[in-house]
Image: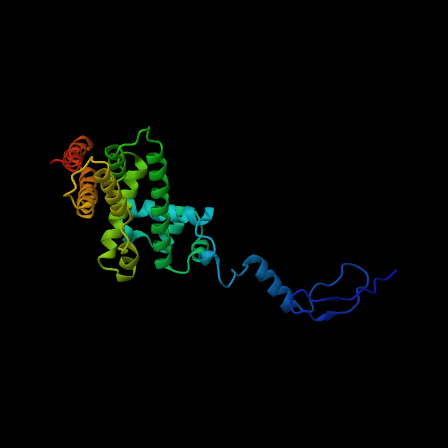
Length: 251
């Protein structure tokens, strides 16, 4: 018995004649059949792409981590799209699918690194034993600028690479050197709280002290990377400044 059911071409939608014996036709011509084959081999990405929808997908993080490793080991100038694909173990097409260009790739990798560092810092600071004094809190915050483990050491090297690139890349500088100073604001808030508790002199300017601490310890952390100072030496410098800031109110 013959099947009289009609169908349409899977590519162009042209009506196909009723099937006779054998397998029903799927395409109206060899041209449409070839188009279908090419689509299966190389499916086109969505027009918008994931670049605007999911910054934290596992694949995007895998690629971002490749940027971090290249930046830390060879500098940001070596982080071409092709090199990043090779380091991440994916094809260049995959990198291009998730990032519309090198600038978006570098900016997203920086954003994810900031987010990763902030999350881990909050976890470490949150693990402090009660009571959390202003001194203990400031020491914990300052420790985030020091290469105390492989992850923080890599992060410092990556930030140094981004800073160097930002000097000659205005578009990247606009992202890297944002107007917001969350760490300085956090340190200033802790100093201000210490003043309210009578644990720091009221004459101090919390904002100026925070700027000095953050910028100073950031530079000292880089010195540790270069081997110019040890962690123990940097901790003594931090303690010296905390002794000055958290002096009796009468000082």
